[in-house]
Length: 195
Image (cartoon, rainbow, N blue to C red; front, side):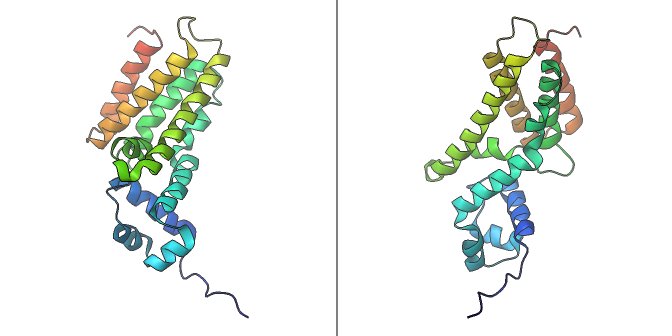
């Protein structure tokens, strides 16, 4: 017996389009109609290929973290603790206020703007954020170039708090250049540099 009908769409392209819609609108601000229109597929194809909306979001979140959000993991490979922190904060500006990306951060939007019905996806985004902060803490524990007053767990939490603030400001309309200036000011204060 022949197998099912071949897909009439490219799953990777459809997933990229779903990522764009979730990133722009947030999880709860995105309807199935929004998704199917952007992805160029019907609901049965969406369910058959990606599962329900929640399952699709899980796939989109993984794609976001491995794609546009991969700068955070890449920054951990910087040779010094100072460079790790700089790359993370500058990367947050580039990601959330870039010319080719929707404003804001998919994870931050999901954590902030999800009600009780979206508890599972909020938990998934929160888990991803906590994993990123834990990885940063572990990397900062290895850094020898930072002042001894910089406790790794507190510094990791502060870097994530600054990055979250950048994402919120980008979503509210602040531009890349202004956010870069703000990030540079934050880095000078954070890393005890003179102005």
